[in-house]
Length: 215
Length: 114
Image 1 (tube, rainbow over the protein chains, first blue to last red):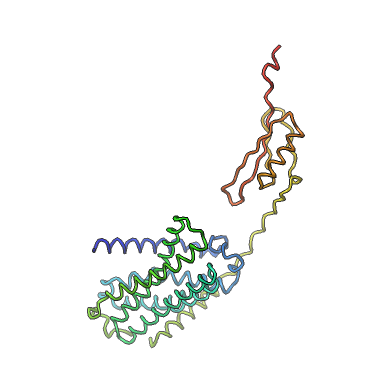
Image 2 (cartoon, helix red, strand yellow):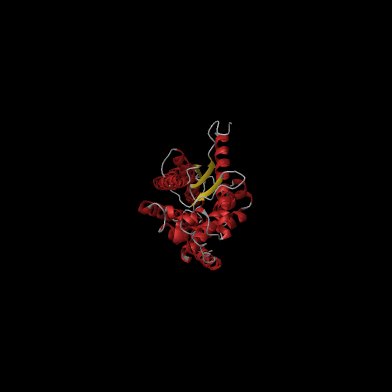
């Protein structure tokens, strides 16, 4: 069980790393990258571009910072660092990737199904993160943990979305239905997995270092 | 930090600052000149060079049937040459193109025998 968990964590981190590395070329601000070329004239719209780069940067920050927030030892031994990184995660989701993602969702690929899917994902991600911040500010550490697990599970839908997309493409599904089905599958997976892990999260066994230490 | 809204405000403010640094989209490169898909756009295959090597010509047509038409017309015009149509570049972004190769017909067996 412990080995399986370790493998799952390692695979998830590796996939997160791949997403980060694959996203870095966007910051050359070149226009001839596959995703931007596919967007056509939309990629020339300055508001859309600002939201796109804000979303990508915010999402990279989330993906990089979140594993440290769930690192038990760091959380117990360096609570100040945990709080600092938590603020970075909060700012990145609530002020960057979340709002920018909601604007991008209005122009998402896949028609209405794609737009609703991304809007739902964005709202749930923003909402779970906001609840996570709100609960820790109120000193309710166990609840905070559960909401942040849900938040990170939704952030990881970026990973599962690409995994489903590759899997369905290999299975021979054409581009447009593949995109929409992968989106909804990844959203459902994130909600179910996040809820399952959150419910297993201990209610009482919370490191003392966090209690009452919220500034 | 007083509330969630402090984080949201901090995030949106930094996002607004960041977005000022996002440059407008660079101008799109000039579109490639459209390929005229008519046999008239094809230059005739040049005559065979003196060293006897086959002459090649890239056709400015993307459609295989049109390329075939061009080849047949050239064949009618120059019956002493043997024409061959070769497709290339199918896997590139440009798509398939056609090359017309003109070879000297082999002399009939025993033609030179005296």
